[in-house]
Image (cartoon, rainbow, N blue to C red; front, side, top):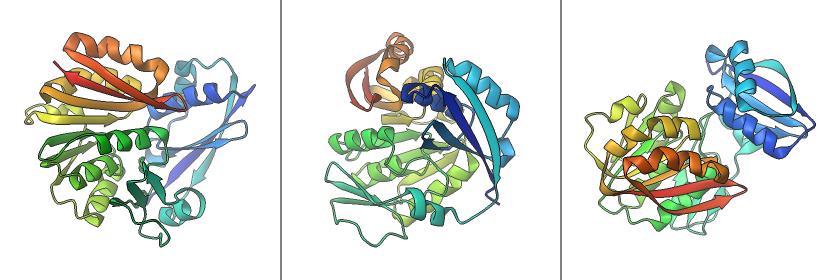
Length: 281
């Protein structure tokens, strides 16, 4: 049963940047979906891992200066596809080359790449800036015949696109069991037969064959904490694409990345969210 808890956060005074900082902190505690409100955000987390003390800890660790109040509502199992179709997920085009839609959509443009995603509550439909930034960069990269690792694969969208772009083999790693199962469904919907999905965290990288590309659209703290394992899983000269954090966080990421032999090549941004491209020396 896909039971969730919706936590409604209100900030006083409301500030969009403060709300984004709070969202980033909540993501570290397992919150999967966020819906902006007029004075804060609604955050969704699986009921089985909800913890009121963790909410307090996330608010404190976020460092937001606004006063934060919150309330809780239980969301019993429902047809999440209906919810996404009705309220959130609309077909989306990226760079006029890729369209992302779900099985329930019928009206969408025919483009070079067509990705079918039934997201349930897993992150990664292309609508968030970080996902679209990653998709745009993957469309620029030559992944033909190359090996790819996608950390925190979520819905599997980036792994699926890499497969469509001609990658030789793709490994998608996802720690959340529900997201992992959702990625399996989406890989099947797109006939991405060379995508292998693994349930677990960065410890699964140990012993894996080094890849030409590594994607990680997660968040700053997880990336900075795991980047040493990312580097070991990347071939010399390999490319790392990172997102899930703000432009202001690039120095924090590079402080962890540079001593490991990673050089910054470029970054792109949308609404202060960024995609960082690094190369292993």
